[in-house]
Length: 73
Image (cartoon, rainbow, N blue to C red; front, side, top):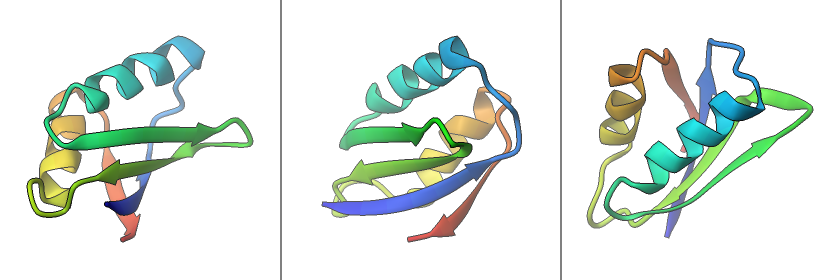
């Protein structure tokens, strides 16, 4: 299991964060998605590194109209 930290430019409300979480968890080999209420722009994503690349996760977010950048991997 590997974790990346992603920064999203948009400010999402609780519903938007929940929808983003669901869409990321629907990706194959993404195991967990976590947000912190004090830093809603930061997203931690756990994934199986042998099956998915971090850029695939970011591209999925971008295709939803969310501007995301990997800040830690």
